[in-house]
Image 1 (cartoon, rainbow, N blue to C red):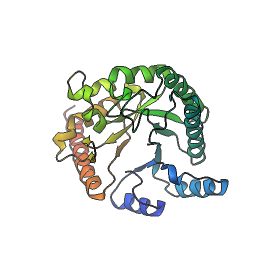
Image 2: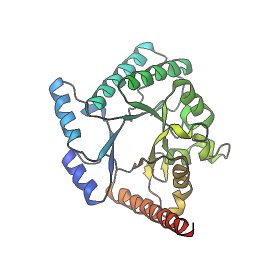
Image 3: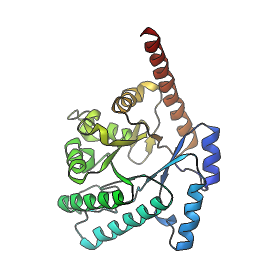
Length: 264
């Protein structure tokens, strides 16, 4: 589940009550710790979520490593480095980031600068035992499987597969590509998945109505061995509805597995 409540105590209690096993923690620009004492308090708060595993996410609006303006690109790099430092102090190992989030054009971005700076950030994270995971979006370079593959290959980043973005993107809706094309070139790099049905502009993330809506995508995640599934829905009703559907899928998979074991 996401960090949808204001305190770690509320998040932990909700997670235990509804049997979530981890937290996908999204940073918000306005609440990033600003002083050493604030950082220390934040680290203690995150550590209090143990034994729940916590992975981290930077949904920063129009903050890009590959901005054409070198000062903008450098500011983004320094911000991500700071976040990596916080995540490292809290014992985190995975950080998901975006390219082009909140933009409707790549005009402000440089492909070569994006690749170079993303590669450098991946190395910076690795030196601190943190995997940088690039998430596919519903629009832009990362919404096109061929360009997404190049970004992953050239930078060495890992992958966060957002199955709702993959469903909504033009590359898939036009049938030029299939959702599996986001992962088949690099299945071993897919470390996280964000689960919901689809994204609608101006509305947000939409939960599935039935298992049929997302079953093929869950099967894809299972097939490639991605075992971190975060339900990326912020309202409680939609969150629990989606979890119920995912649990239905997992129960069925376990049933089939037991049947095969007995048959053999």
